[in-house]
Length: 109
Image 1 (cartoon, rainbow, N blue to C red):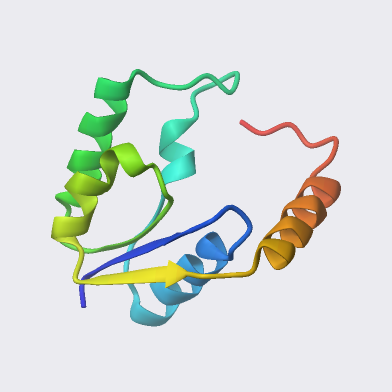
Image 2 (image 1 turned 90 degrees about the horizontal axis):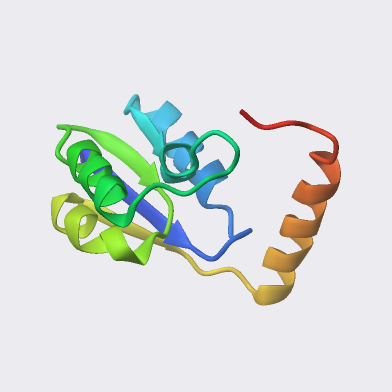
């Protein structure tokens, strides 16, 4: 396996699992949120983001996390494995609230 796609709801554990897989399998890690959000929390154009994701997916190896359904058609065919983080709504909500609480006051770049 050289390309692993990790998807699931917000708070399901996608980023944590993707990071663990990338470390254990010695594969590059791609968090799509870091490619989507521009300075000032502005979103890219749809075409621009699709092109960037297509270029990322064309790389020979990766563990990629993120939903972004509009780009799934360019990522899924390249993936060797799809991992769906199917976590309960309650657990997702708790994780989102905890993450928000622990990151309050921080400025993201």
